[in-house]
Length: 85
Length: 151
Image (cartoon, rainbow over all chains, first blue to last red; front, side, top):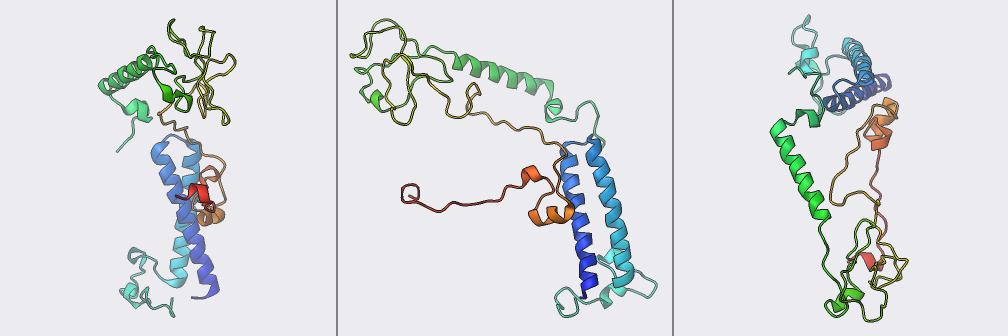
């Protein structure tokens, strides 16, 4: 996996983490406006980062597959194929 | 599931019956705290020179008239001392019983202050620390063992 791709993936993981934290907080503070805004912001960033990553490098999850060329999901390296990942 | 805006705190979600039971329990505990204390004297409890102090929460222990420590002439107030160098319970005038941690705060109850959505790390740091909340960043730092405390 090249450097650019790694950095992009790291960015996605960072946004996903922020979203997860906001979710846990909001579960106990459902009316907190600051937290809701934070959640909206990072969810949006997460979705965009995921979309652009998947456009360039292929699907991260099976439902992110672009089906215009068939089931590309199984054409990607499997997680244990470390050299390719 | 939609959350009703008028009952979103844990307290508000507790139904009336349960709340009444909890309040009754609190009242019983309060009454127990205020109960009159038994006598302590060197003749009845010889181990009191090194044992627990009968005073709690900065209240003084008032002896009923009658028994008193043999050395003590003053029968008005029996105070105890929790200082490190003197753990004896004797009739002394200026010692006051201290709750070890927070004076006035009831023992054996859990306090959970409400968290607020501030003091946040940037997400890049947060993912590294395991939390985006600075106040929850409490790494475990075991101290080295010394002879006395390791058994």
